[in-house]
Image 1 (tube, rainbow, N blue to C red):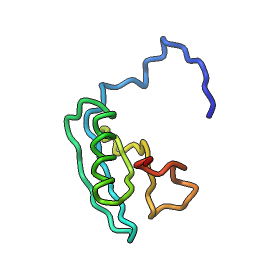
Image 2 (cartoon, rainbow, N blue to C red):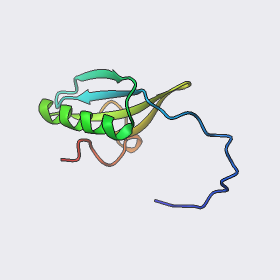
Image 3 (cartoon, rainbow, N blue to C red):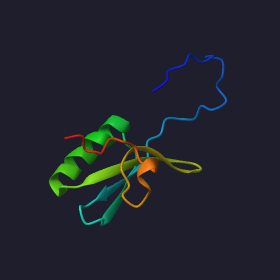
Image 4 (cartoon, rainbow, N blue to C red):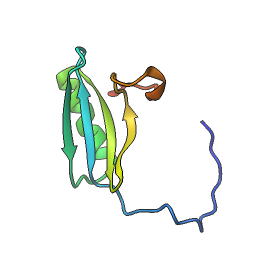
Length: 94
């Protein structure tokens, strides 16, 4: 991981806070269940819900932020993509 300072005057990329997310739960058999989480307080609330839900299902999940141009992959593993396209950490972390 690299960390670099930025010019705080660079605000071209900023948007309103993201409150809508998509969570895809993956079973051990490769079956998916997709859910939109709308109007969340923040990403931490969504992670807490997804961790608990994945634990009760015995599954992993991938978390996306829903933005104007589509979905932004934030965390988790999608077994339908090549391994190098995935995040290294599976969720829930357990």
